[in-house]
Length: 143
Image (tube, rainbow, N blue to C red; front, side):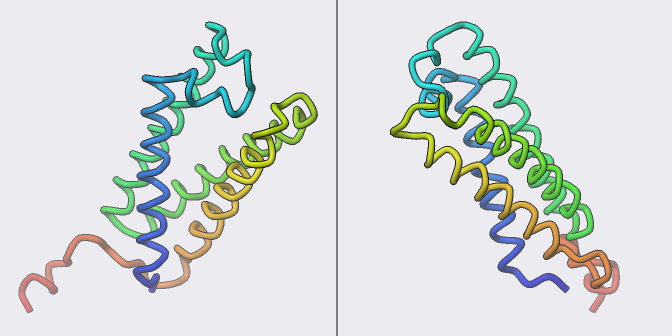
């Protein structure tokens, strides 16, 4: 059975992802400036920021919905979010020397940290353990 700590952390991570995704949709320049610097004002950068924002919004909302159902439902959402963050980290590493000096280490830490946290949370929702359900079962309601 998963303790409440991983569920709380997964919920917080999902909420953060929703916030980041929503901000990228409405204020894309603000979201990508730390990542790419002066090119953040271009229409291409804003377009890509919004697409990433949509991805993060969807992953966050999906994770929250899954957490409301059970650990078993949440596990794949955490793993998929980790994969998205791992790709972000890999791309950041590939472009590292071209990224703004003042923010590149922070961006790398954020992407790697989010990937590690998401993957660790996915593992915490172990499919071999009895799943914690967010909804009371029929026996819980009658007891």
